[in-house]
Length: 241
Image (cartoon, rainbow, N blue to C red; front, side):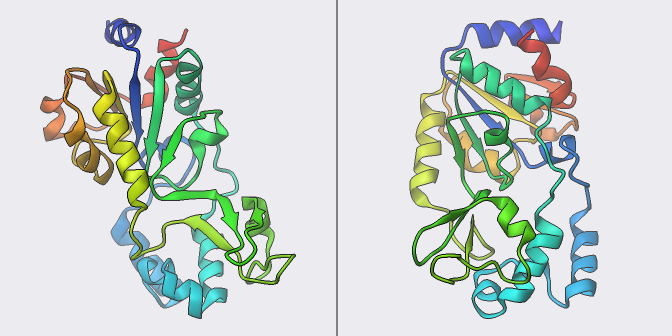
């Protein structure tokens, strides 16, 4: 019954915007660690907090430590898109999903074949030399020894992501807000209405098809027009069958 109703809502829509939350990483094989535990483990291993290690200051002044942390803790070589992302890509091909917005840095939507993705915090798949502009794949960053250097001009390569303490690109935020304001349906996947992603953007939505698909119940679920409490990978693929 839930799947049938969701199919109807999607079929009736022509401009769906999907918000993909960071908890979807768990679907893709990324190990879940509670934030407090992660901070303790990281500080014990590296001598600094995650925010200090993943900062522009560390990148500029202690690049060897920055990239050691980046390779060992941030990048994840076995991370692949779950069924959720492939279902989104299919809904995009069918002309239903027009925009996908995410704060995740892992490029999972792109890997699954999605085209119109707004990555508010950038992507580990995009790495660039800040001097000459040459781009490098994530594999180059993972295989580099100590500090990844541009092969053309020998400048330290910059990961294409927002580092701790940096502001998000206001043009991307505006683009995301515009997409939400024009949507006839918003599909929130893997997160709740209190997360940074939804709290920042859902205020721009004015229509009556706000749909949540996520495992855990939340007290703000009552503000959605429709809510399914299950892993999105168990639900969304059924919609495209």
